[in-house]
Image (cartoon, rainbow, N blue to C red; front, top):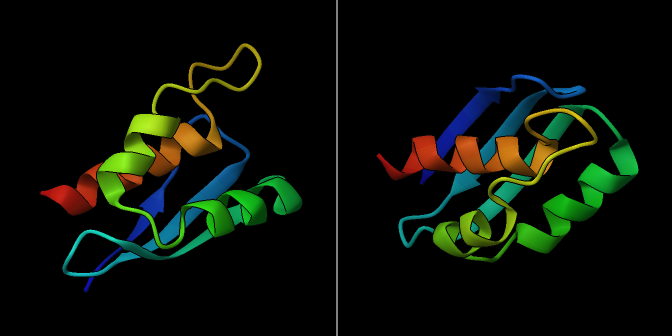
Amino acid sequence: MKHTLYKTQGTCSQFIDVTVDENDVIQQVVFYGGCHGNLQGISRLVTGRKVDDVIGILNGIRCGDKATSCPDQLCRALETLKK
């Protein structure tokens, strides 16, 4: 298992706690801060999916006029687990 507690940048959420198994399948995602209902939904939608699939879907999403978003920051967290 691989795990990170990722410090987000540029979003309302402050941290993302991510666990990925040895096959790069997401086992758990927990956002701290931010829009709880939306982020809980994102967490459920990505759990059980491959890291690269989620990055392909969510990478680059922006929130309003911000350069990033919580889904985009999740991709940054997942990238740290691929190394």
